[in-house]
Image 1: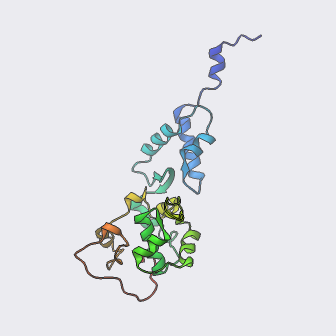
Image 2: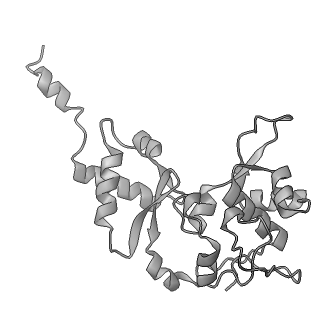
Image 3: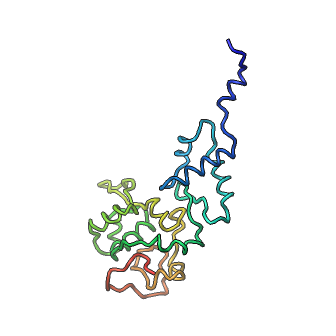
Length: 219
């Protein structure tokens, strides 16, 4: 027999104070190379914790700081503030190059997902080689999506959280339009018809030339 009351026993399972939960979330995000989902936080933190609330407190605390808590798809990560990205240019140089075919294929998938290989070829007007798809899969910028409920049940392709993270997007809905791309100096000519779907500018009849293999968003 013990003199412990039911209330004393229940207190043993009380969740840590919110400030401590916030520190836990901060530690996990800081140490994780990949974005972390709420489900991951729930599995790691003690029983009774409220990671969503702790995450919101942490996000507000980092507002205006050199790094911020950023949502990437359905996950969260600590990332450098966008206006300070220039300080990291040397460390963030992307050495891999994409062929024009890969750039166009990636753009079609991003703006039309989920999309099948046949639909990609219809939009581009030319066939898509297996190597192009394999390259994007290997870079983990696209992944296989659900099969379409059409004859043959073809697989679809969608962009990954890695793609969103690389370009600082919360979701594919944040993808820029043609005018935004040009204003940022990332698009000099009009993309091939259909690549950006309804975002094409009907007043511009220029098309990209066929020379060279440009880098993706080369500055």
